[in-house]
Image (cartoon, rainbow, N blue to C red; front, side, top):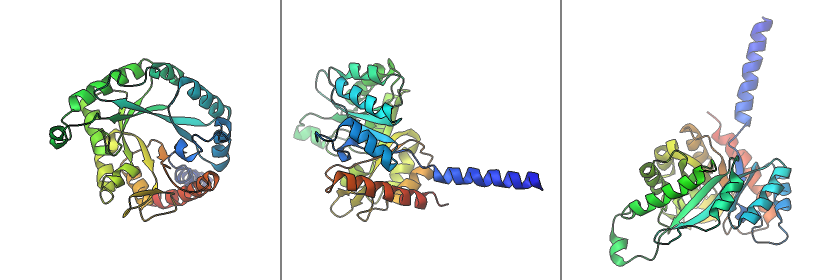
Length: 286
């Protein structure tokens, strides 16, 4: 009897731990005082740790800035989940000259290089061409970045951004599959899916892209205005999105997009982490 009770207790504990351990969750630095002098790396790290976030995602600027972010986060056992960089079709070089210096700093870490691919000004004929008309150039760019990143054992994800060459998760998936790099993954970003008119297709898109997803971002949203909001605001079923990710096997971290969300930084961070706990409680219910 004692053995049976012990077994049941262990099973119950394992179940409790599984439910209590959500995806690792981090805000983008655009919601943690980016560009504000009083929001130093130390303040960012200390604030996020005290609230219960797992780390942060940064827009990459310089290797020197990256080093200061790493120092602040490391001191508090926090992670930098992603560094976001712009790359360009039709431009040589296609990315910042100091990218390799930053990649050296990422060696031995789990930080993902999150690349956005911008397109040059298009002619009317090019605009009318199929979405994948320039994929050959995009795939070459991606392979070049992946080869550079692989020297430092860094993973790369392709970011979908409305108005860029890669706009959605499905675009991301398409070029990722064509590039075929073993350190490469796709990404799914709620804000850009909604702004692209995919607000009613999110679960369908997740199911399609989940096997290749490396990074994800969520946010609250008003579907009518397509505005980015806090997680406790708007009419988007964020818990449904998180549940779809879980049910389709996604196990990576989840980022929080905060671009242009009004309000006080501290208040928004507190509201978002509390909303995240409720979202996970709903999404983890069988």
